Length: 113
Image (cartoon, rainbow, N blue to C red):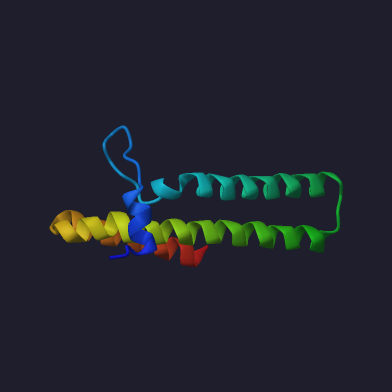
């Protein structure tokens, strides 16, 4: 029987030194690569301002960097829901309620940003 892609990512997830597994651990290298790309975009913005580039060109690059961060955040949120929240819900109890509330608050912050 084939596993779903999320299940495969979680099966590959590594445990942290504290013994906690993060949903993103299986894709950590991919996430770091995306974040380095965003970092490069931000450095490019600094250069553009330093070199007195046209405002609209800078705003276009701000939009691209913002979209890249939003994409990263959504991916991380999906992994959190599929791993951390799902595991807590499976166990039940107050931890499950806390994880669902925490995820809801994170979603609300993302929607407002």
